[in-house]
Length: 213
Image (cartoon, rainbow, N blue to C red; front, side):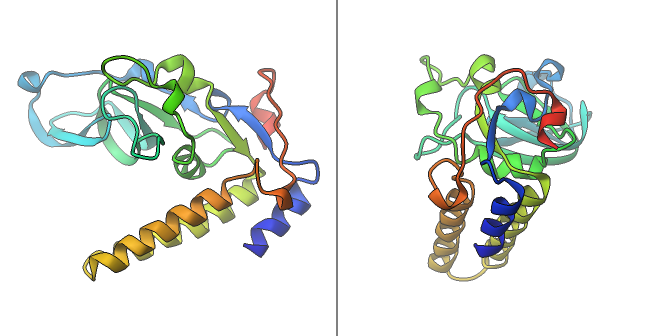
């Protein structure tokens, strides 16, 4: 990953800063609307819950590009990482998934990949597993300059595209590619532990959006 290492050394000589998630995106949870199954009118628009599309309905409440993160129910995988879904276009989202949109200076696609690397096991509580609003907003995000984010996204999206192309081939090969993607995702986004990146934490709640451009 020489190009990314070089970019980080040149663009982040003092290390990569960490910010609360709420400073890296717009959180749209207050615009979600749950609809009981019996009250839904069938249609063409995806109806999203904690772990992806649950149904198709006749109306939508969001139109754009979003990242959805499971709030309650099936919210983490076997590795303790959040269930994260990429959603585009006209959609409906119920109150079982947090929903975020992009702000200037932080790539939404970068957040999609990065959030999947965070272990949230210690934050999940209750008989019905829940990643509550307060903990979600305070998730720590490494925020390198946008040029670095874009290069990381390019590499990881290429792995995902290759995996999709292999879906019709041997399942063992597809599984191997998925493991390879996860390996490089975790390596590329582990700013804290990779000594070659010189990453440092900047735990503060006083940053404005201009801090991350």
